[in-house]
Image (cartoon, rainbow, N blue to C red):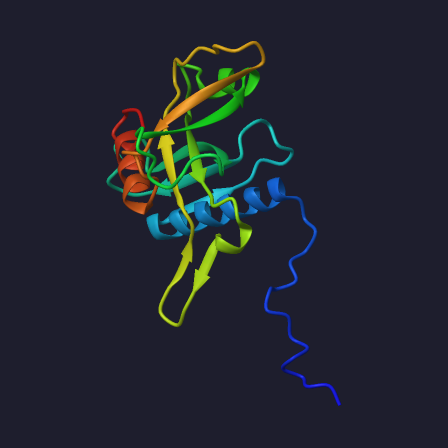
Length: 182
């Protein structure tokens, strides 16, 4: 007779989805949580036009328009540790993508959101009865005016002092809503 408890593996059977696609899904989940807490709606361009998401924030307190939009490019990496001592996380952007994000005169502002994830997929999420956590953290940066420095790709530094959470997103939308930049 086989013991049912003995047949349960200690390590969960994870699917064969490639790690980069899993990272995209994790950062989408992070963005969804932040946008929900900030009161934003989300739209994914279809087809993908070089921007991952467009967020909209509606408030009668905005003076430029009651509905403010923001385009977001997501990148993630496991090559940086959480809260790196050097004060930044570096992500590679194709020069074509960087040129799209860095345009100085835009109607809809754009930011880069860089997320550090654990290399071990099993450490990405933790759940208990009172909390659900995504590991590690995402940071944001406006790259307006940044020029490509590599032949095909440019390493873009994002300061870890600019944590991307609902408070930061609300502040970004408020600045844009007053006619300013992110």
